[in-house]
Length: 362
Ligand SMILES: [Zn+2]
Ligand SMILES: [Zn+2]
Image: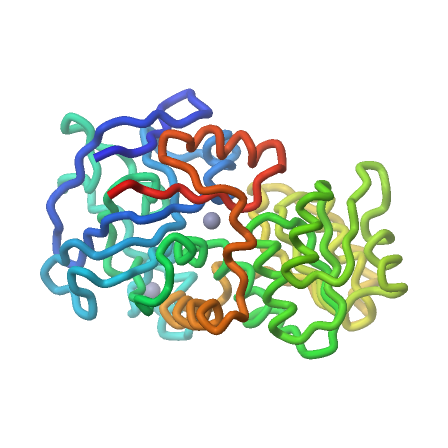
């Protein structure tokens, strides 16, 4: 089968023939239908975060179950599924406390000494974030999978596997935006556009989309934003956001993972406002918080994987799509073949792409 491999010392992917092992206990083999290009893939591709190489990138995908291993319950060949990196054990304190997305002993790759799930001529290929979506077949732990309604188009379902769930969940479960509130969303990639839609669905009346790229803001307006702010490289972004509605916002959601946007996300808050950081910021990076601003009941918080177990969250988002509440097609900038994956990441580097979707032939 074909897969996109990240080799040592490279910042692009190589399409090669690889092999997938037989299905082991508690594993599910899936024929990949579609995989989204997520910013987290790009960060790892560009070396912002270290991962073992060679590895098969990708972590946002949907497909059809081919085979299930011993002990797997609730899945059968033919099921339509979405994958998620947030595997969980169901037994640790965090899982039992309702935070399975932060599981302390999340099932990941097979143990050392066992045959690897993915290999090339017998040598191990590392599985990225428990999934490795840029591959014609996916072999994952059963806790990385959720079954979905078969009426859901599987190409668009892939988007729910990471960006959509992260953005919507941050709005619904962490920020808990209420009807009539004002929301600023900093960064209009896949997560930001999802957060904008979440704010619209939650009933926010002022939704300010912020990005460097005016064409992304046009899409944001189509998906529910009421105001658009082009961030000026040397301007005060927080002031720009405040100026858009004449006061500070009730909520801000930061979907970039940069110091400047995280700082602005807090500084654009009105009294009692809440900033929710969703963007992936490299370890060790800090941003300033004006202590005085906290005293007016403002709050700074983070959200990971939508702050909810994905098996609860994703079927709800599928239903929102099926009812016409969630616009997924509008978030897709292009559908590409696996061979075009590097072109997709180049567009993302330039800040041009919304969500590019790899569609597999099979
Ligand atoms: Zn992602
Ligand atoms: Zn756990």
